[in-house]
Length: 330
Image (cartoon, rainbow, N blue to C red; front, side, top):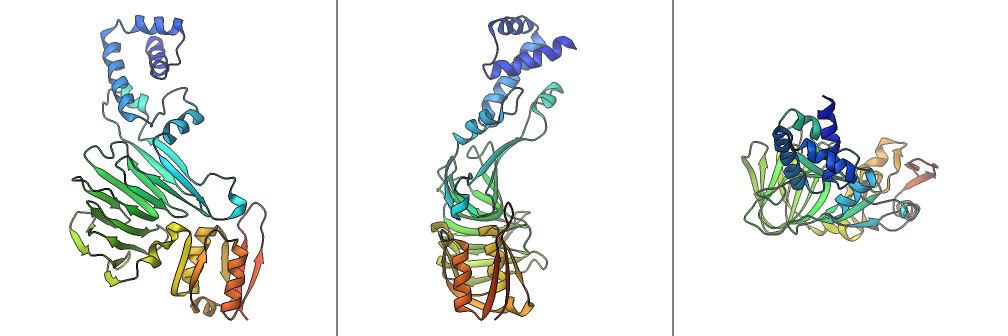
């Protein structure tokens, strides 16, 4: 058992060029055993295929991040001045199960994925390895497998994202909560937050198939079509919309078209990482239309609401926490 443990330690160190001359010589002796040699060949091939996903022994968090970030073309977009010092995107590569444990039990297959998380109050842009561009809104998570672009182009979305999909014979699929968007090459916006009771797809260019999770087509969208699917009733409604209202956030604008203040507040909470409360329920039923620039301080937005709506707003700054906004009738 001691020799076996030593083999794993030396093998994983060797894969990352961290062995001394003495350790390399010791590993060479262990590889004289054919069973060890076969096992080392397997993990060497698997490690090569995993590319950026490295959770083997002695790999530091900094090294892991550097490896991942080389694979992603990301650009962060700050929303609030006082959070410029923070990173706009967090990318974490996970390995399903423990690599060494799986291989120790001689399971040859392993599944890995990259997970991109955008904190509240920020947004980010990235380019996948097939050339597809993705804009991720605040509080959004995007996940895709390490085999993305190699026979499949599948991603999973929790949040809001705008996709410019590179054309390919391989379908590009976005899995939402209860549906799947399937395209070959097109431009669309998708909203599917787990804490909301609907999913929404807005098509800008090209065509889109919206499928249920078993693969059956629910609808085929044309440009300017928007489908909204209720999580509870599973009812799907298709309408024609002005797409710029649903895609302007990618260029730093928030456009509202006669929306309820309660719905606007939910979006602002996510985009600016604040806590908004209504003193009276009826205040949330007020409607608002207008455009807000995301890079403006949030207190300027509060002032605009007070000027344009019959409301009074109390803004409280919370150090090391979410600022609180209480909206009441004027």
